[in-house]
Length: 313
Ligand SMILES: Cc1ncc(COP(=O)(O)O)c(C=O)c1O
Image (cartoon, rainbow, N blue to C red; front, side, top):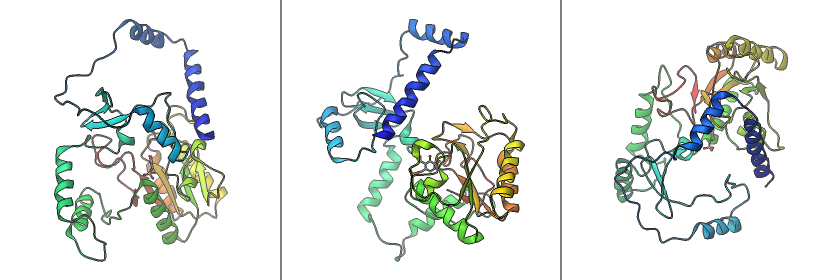
């Protein structure tokens, strides 16, 4: 509940700050918005099925009773989403919404895409699960297909259950490989909430008073709000300073999101990652690109956003 209150307070504070800004652009947007009718969704050739399940209120009450308070929502009346089709979601009344969130970009190919449903159905009819101590061609085929999308010698794949688990594994491998403990991550980063990745994460809303490990959070190279503007070399110098003054001179690794997601779609200052990767490698560390949000073609032009690293999670 404390977390929920804190988040709500932030949203309200931000809203009240922005309402005090009187730039002509914002005034124009406001007046334009208030006089024109709300935008309409384009036609879509699909009818949601009639819904006969529990009401939003019943769903909400059951969730409150049986699930922990860490499951929060931002709404006075959260939507009851009962169906999805490609880029759209439907609520219990059949009302259609454009899904601009896609489950934190995890629904990359749209909801209930027929090709994906078909592949899942066909496999489920044949074999649902077996352990990796037996052979099955699918795991090797999938790893090969992913490796074909990777540059250079990034050709070995580990399958895990979540982004946190991927970053846990990458950090553990970096530490074991280098024999150093110290990791560097960026302020405003989100790398997960598990017991080790919570240390890499640097957003107070997602941190708890637990041991955080040997982790240095360097200045965020945010080209818009950062202390050095878009000068990537100054932020890179801060990383060198941390290594020189805050460590033995050797580090295990550096991790950064290619574009920060939970911290607010923040791109990194130009040239920053290339300079930092050089600095970190000279200090014996490995470089990890957290592509949990940006990978799998989600940045548009490339399958992965950042191509010259040792680990990609
Ligand atoms: C960049 C990034 N890394 C790691 C994670 C953690 O992933 P998961 O929630 O699957 O553990 C997230 C989740 O939002 C993320 O955005």
